[in-house]
Amino acid sequence: MGVAFDKENLLLKVKDLCEKGQKNGLWAGNVIVAGNGEEELFRYVDGIADPASGRRMTYDTIFDIASVTKVLGTTTLLAIAHEKKLLDIDEPITKYLPEFTGKTYGEPTIRDFSMHTAGMGIWYPHYSNKQLEMQNDILKLDAECEKNTVYKYSCLNFLLLSFLLRKVYGKDLAAVSDELIFSKLAMKDSSWCDSKDVDRTIRTINAAPGVISDFGALSMYPVATGNAGIFSTAEDMGKFARSLLLYGEKIMAKETAKLLFTSCSHPSVARRHAVGWDMGEEMLPKEFSCQGVFHSGWTGQTFWLDPGKDIYIAVLTNRMGDHTRSKYLRREIGFTIAESLLA
Picture: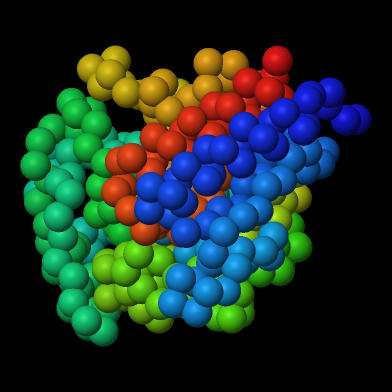
């Protein structure tokens, strides 16, 4: 069933905001989609995918989605592993990953790591093509503080989760995601570590098309790591979003999917957070329900979902300018779309 909204007026507003980002050097181009659990409702494409060649953005442009990998890939596989009883997210991570010998405070659980409240720091060792050395060094890192005392966003948490998931699934996450997510949802252009088509892939602020932008994920290449490294399109992200808006249709049970839309933050941590997905209020449209979640990527993407209001929004750009200014302009675009679709 279609949703009534002033599409022409929304296109003009989004066009103005996207052109503002281009004129201010925040990004070279963008692909933006929004919809509900049944269909895509809105689409806007403009600008340049690769400034070096002048190749333009198209609806099927492939993006390095950077940290959106944490939710589209890692969190989804974590939820499925919990459902399959390969692990229990409320058990200490060391129960399944005893190789992690770093000192922790309060036995942080797998859920704590997924919410960035395990007490781990931000920085970690990374190398050029020395996967085993990097992993072994990360497994020795100590926490900085007691669990559930502070929210500290860190790729380290999701690197550790990827080591855990690779162990419980018994294979690389690229293969697992193909089997349990991408193939089931017909996400034909999505892949972990390598782009399906370099000639359709964006150039990022620090990497050529098809090269992983995240330094940690690139150091572990060709091993898939949980913090970054997925390549995807707006169309594929829409397919993924529609599955989750229908509480995991085709990939997980409804009760499992609810974990991804339920705040489970400890009372001592001010920021709302679900398993994997951020619920920080400053980045959520006022029209969203209490189930609204989001995640952003360093290379210029923000992805919102809300099953309570049956809406998803993906603002995909190839960021070329300031990270913070880009993030908040993407937020303005997302909020504008939410206001129109949920009026």
